[in-house]
Amino acid sequence: MQNNKSGRIEMISSSAEHIRIELETPELLAEKLNAVVSVNWPSGEYDRDAMEFFLSCFESGGEAAQGWYGWYAVNIDNAEGARALVGAGGYFGPPDINGVVEIGYSILPEWQRRGYATEMVNLLATHALSFDNVSKIIAHTSAENIASINVLTSSGFEGAGTHEGNLRFELTS
Image (cartoon, rainbow, N blue to C red; front, side, top):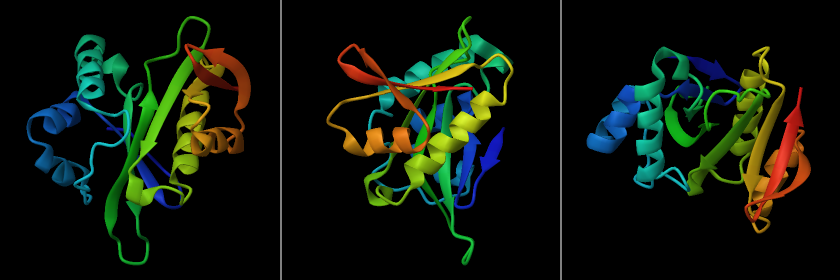
């Protein structure tokens, strides 16, 4: 399992085992992540369909899929050592032949507007751009999602038009 840390969060790369736990026995996710998991989990667009998609990607992609799909964002309270799942993010797969990778992210409502999404996007971008075959990261959000637009622009992404009714943002290496 891969992990990336910043000042407040630890990003834990998901695996087929994580996804099976979420789908079959979600109450065990807290134990697997060593973190408190909110009753509001999962959040946003990370739903059962997304979990099943990621599971199929892990099962078909094998070892090469590890790190290129879901990541859990766990808040680490340095004062008390408490850990809590604050959100999830990740990639829609490995980079394509042009070196493009797409990211997505979601923060639980009780953790929103505290900078966690920006921190997560920055960690995901840094991780992706550490690979020589990644030249661009893209993200999509609705025009109404001002918070997400602010996260992307504050993380260095620039507007790049629209795609299927959503705004497209890009970050190049």
